[in-house]
Image 1 (cartoon, rainbow, N blue to C red):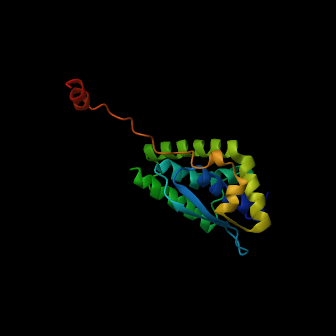
Image 2 (cartoon, rainbow, N blue to C red):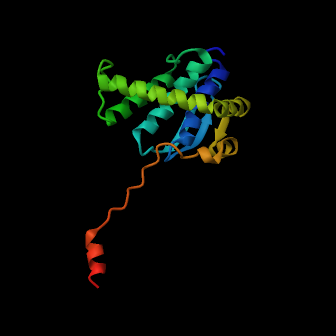
Image 3 (tube, rainbow, N blue to C red):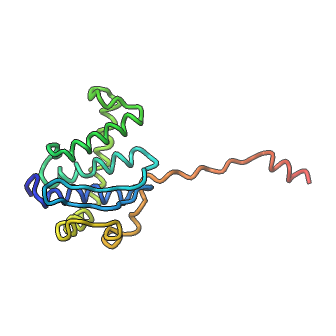
Length: 177
């Protein structure tokens, strides 16, 4: 697969779409491959955990790594992916402008490992979405619903249910009666 080819762009955007499908709180509105180049994965919602946002952004880079042998940083869209990663890291309290910052290095390394595992485990789904994108050029959220398993939807980075705390006043109130 050649970098910048329609097939590579379809796989890149499919990486975003499948990761977004799996991240809790995020909905895929549309995935599109414009004739003039690039690609767009339009999302709605926000992941409750910033690591979910990083996965959505970094999964496409991991797909590039698998399909063309390296992260494709040359297109404007890739710069937007990187910009989003920096915004999320700043929100996590990590100095994303300093690549020598140990917290930054650890966050990037951890996120890249997670993205790699995600892409590895879901590459057949990514290929399925990429094939549909190549055929139709545009997929809506409903199209993804038909292509992707329901059990994957909203499964990653869901907010943890808070354990209910025992209120001693309630026990006292009931035990005194």
